[in-house]
Image 1 (tube, rainbow over the protein chains, first blue to last red):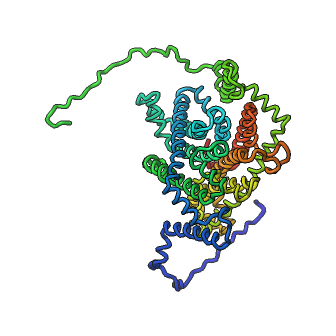
Image 2 (cartoon, chains in turn blue, brown):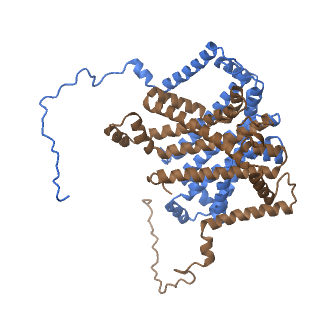
Image 3 (cartoon, rainbow over the protein chains, first blue to last red):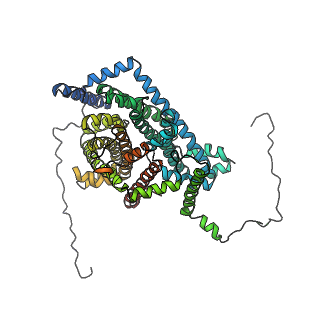
Length: 293
Length: 307
């Protein structure tokens, strides 16, 4: 360093005598009606949806693809309408939703039980983390053959696999949430003399609600996937069931428009649960409490 | 304070402790005994929980004399696992599942990447991506299996199609929302460097939103793994013999799900349990071996995630 001269580049001084006025540029102008219209989010998304439907419909008309392989949008909607009118659709939806609710509720109950034990004792905490580490990576659907062996072909088997798919996902993320509650909040709870169940419900649950909700959402997603899958397998083995079974049965009979109708229904239920139920819970709890933006 | 009443203040009587009792019981500092030090080690406690569960299982099945077809003993399960690993080439079945999964995972990520890049570049692409993910993410991939079987027949293509579906949407959803959450400061840094197009995406957006991309990849893997096992179970129900159709030859055709299904059909319950153990082990290996490592080397090293 010392024996080398360092060249420093010095920027020459200059001065701009005259700023050219901006030409042909609107500094401010009113948006045209079209621009304002296409700036509305809902309008753009609706038109994309309509565009996709249009492409689907014209593809199946023009290419003359076999309707058994790929029905037109119109035929699918017709099938959906027909099954809704005849009440068949609601019957299937009800069976599926009933099993889902039973399994979900029972899964949450078990998860709560495990968590209460895990919070109160160290051995319980170790037990829970070992069990979740073991069972979380095991797809619930792979227990279906065993469930069929133990409970027979029927709703109890479906509930069993649904419980399994909810239980570990919810326990895992709730437990992680509980463990990361700050020491300050815990001490506040202890200062108030809270113990046992009241300590859990007044301190731990509200403080860890964000990750509990994540667990509930993941649990729902797994349960929904597992249940539809289980009903498909049942379709292969016995003959009684909800939406998954309907998809399987109609697919087997090459009633493809009805398969699409059932798929629409699966999407609609998924959208309702995710965007209406969970979204509302989120707005009323963690967003209101300022835990999520 | 009421205006007409006389406020009476409670004055605490003065008191002075003439003698503070020395702590009688509590040690201020002491060495932990050997037992306490052993019990404080996490792996020791967890391992003993595991051993205890296994022993309880073995004792229960032996003393209650449960039919082995309903609930086999642990030793029978372990024996079945060893036999199927050594003699029956269980690893071939594992490889059948994993290779299908890998093919689907790679193609799925490529498609998701194209969708997300379009979503970053144009507003139309953005709208298309959000509409498609909102519609198709809640649809369980396995529900498409009957359609996929009609379109592609009984074979690996049908399974890869639904694997794609189970991977593309969560990965695209998380990556896209991660990109949207990149702070304006980082974006401006990128623009200041004159980055555009792919340079901008690879040098600014991807590193900045890597935690959320990783979450998407993890959820995609979890869905794909579950979908694959379920699909193999359904295939098992659909055709009793899938040999030659799932890529491999002879008795080792089919993947793990198929093995579980086939053994259950033949009432080989210990082998069903052995299959389940294998599924768990593969799951743990991928979770903790692959994703853990990627996480350690990226988001944790970069200080984007604690613990």
